[in-house]
Image (cartoon, rainbow, N blue to C red; front, side, top):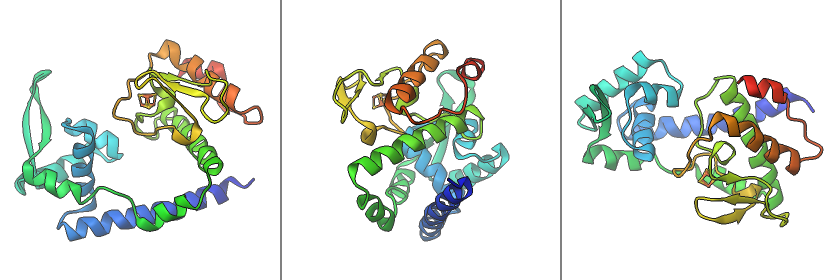
Length: 222
Ligand code: SF4
């Protein structure tokens, strides 16, 4: 298998997503970064500018400039952070919330393409994405994602049902790889001492033929 071909395929899809971001931003008279900040605040709630920069993978001065423009446009406001009076949290204004809704959703063409995958293809794809995202997180290439594999409520491979071997303790329900979440609002990060065991149980029991590149020893150090 040629890794470059996989990355090339992912890049083709990212072009579509970036293009949609630009088009939506242009229609809303914003830059793509400003649109992403509105979307981030809408999805995840109030945040400090540093957290926004980290989530978007941009430098803090870039985020600060974009936030300044959003404040001047009346779409975002700064309020004192109840956790630290010296810091401020960014909140959407009512106009900001309306504008942020324009950034929801994914391209119809991409949804249609995903719909062409059958259940087992989606499950395998989502499982592979989960592994890639965790690796990227550990390399600090992307911020921590709110995904099942790193959640305190995740119980991997605890049921005999091959279609739904996992359990979410938050909603007390079984589910399969096709329902793995990559950005869940109910996510609570696993403490480090449980993270390795949970991950091993997820990858070892579910994929006899898969190799998990990082060793357990490396995991412990991460
Ligand atoms: S709370 Fe969300 S992230 Fe956590 S296990 Fe349940 S579905 Fe997955």
